[in-house]
Length: 358
Image 1 (cartoon, rainbow, N blue to C red):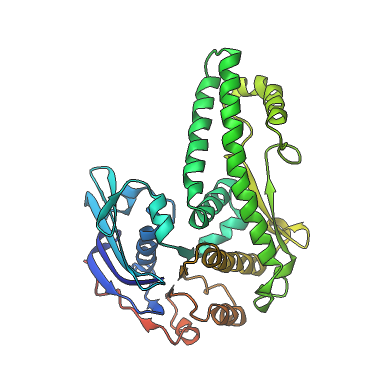
Image 2 (tube, rainbow, N blue to C red; image 1 turned 90 degrees about the vertical axis):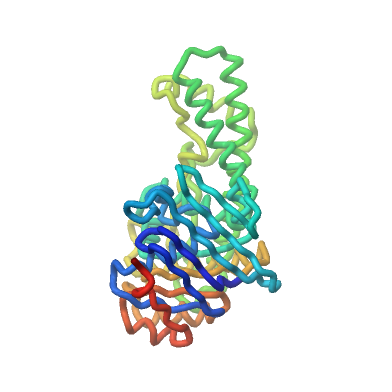
């Protein structure tokens, strides 16, 4: 798919701006603080209905404004036009697809596929488990939109179960919530495991052209129990019974998909501990390329790729390998403060953002 035109009103540092975008993408060269990341964030917002940097909607408003609007006009791979409009005002988010109001953000995930790459992606290796869960939940939702509702239902049950643990309860009441918790968790885990298996098969595949060590990368799922969750509901129920005294003490669920983590391995060793900075950067960039390939293969929609100053800490050889690998198969937007980036992405037309702000 392709983003043809983007309109911003009171979004971040943009007062009112419109951008006509090229079919293969654009190059955005501007100083730090000029609004490069804000522009890419607005593009991603059209496909996710949320900040790719996990900021609250009110934080996306231009200073001293109480509302914002983002509108993207897309051309789908089959040639059909698609309009996405999102607005935030009076504490409410409003979304329209082709001028028809929609209530569920999963509708956006079904239509628009965007892969955002940024220096902060290094946190996927070295950051908190919460950061990794957020990324993988978002990636799974783009490929399998029903996952959004399944995850939301699970988190609602976790909240209700935690409320139960804070008060006196009857055994039958707890048993009922335990079973709901287990059933919802198993649904979440099924999607996560399926996605993880796909990723690991891809790491072992065609990405050697970027780095010879890619085939040594593996992602493991780390649950809050020793080993792995039992497959049978009754066995997990027994685990919860053993945990009951501690859960009553701490008044919250002590195991579950909302606490689990992902671990990158390089040749069997923890990448976070034993990997170099270069190996970590290459790993997360290859992960994003795999995400793009899986999105296209499973959904039939070519994603739009956003590269936000990710080549600053990458050597020229690997920068060129990534550019050659992408080879404009997808629409690409590359943002950087460095002029030399234009040598690798010479086919991209520059997009001037400096005269589009208030």
